[in-house]
Amino acid sequence: MTKFIPFVFTLACLSFLACKDENRNTVPLTAESEKEAPALTKSEVENSVVALNAALVDAKKNSLQVLTSESLTYGHSSGKVQDREEFIDDVINGPFDFLSIDTSDESIHISGETAIARHVFSAKGMNNGKSADVHIGVILVFQKQNDKLHLLARQAYKL
Image 1 (tube, rainbow, N blue to C red):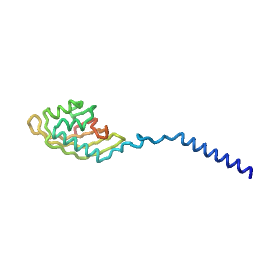
Image 2: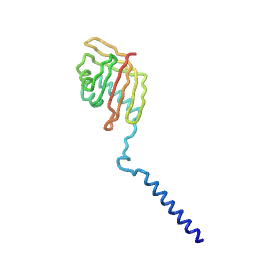
Image 3: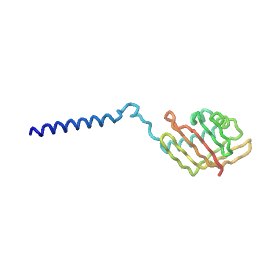
Image 4: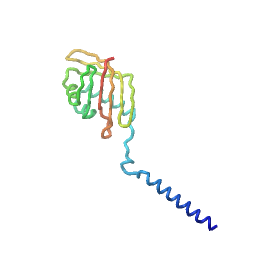
């Protein structure tokens, strides 16, 4: 019996040390780690694409600013690339006026706080007062910033 007591004591000490060592490698929960932003959803991205297309048709500066990142790079199928300010100015004051926009063949890929949306972009509009139709491929890159999706990059290509 006297041999059994040191064995139990040693076993208890080893268990205590193992638990103590295990706890040393854990990260304590903080308010910040408990408040992780939820992952992006496909519907959030779809809604952002719809909102962006509506803003292109409406051509309202505030709507376009809310939907785009300050570091936006906006590529046209012609090869022209604009920053945010140039893009917004072109939508509002440029020669092309969107009357309607439809998308098809949309695919969405989400990675963390970033989403990539691809689709066929079909639009009816007026270019310098003349009727014009647009049918191009588009890739959009959205990034979650301050709990909202913002367009970070756009590249169009000819079909």
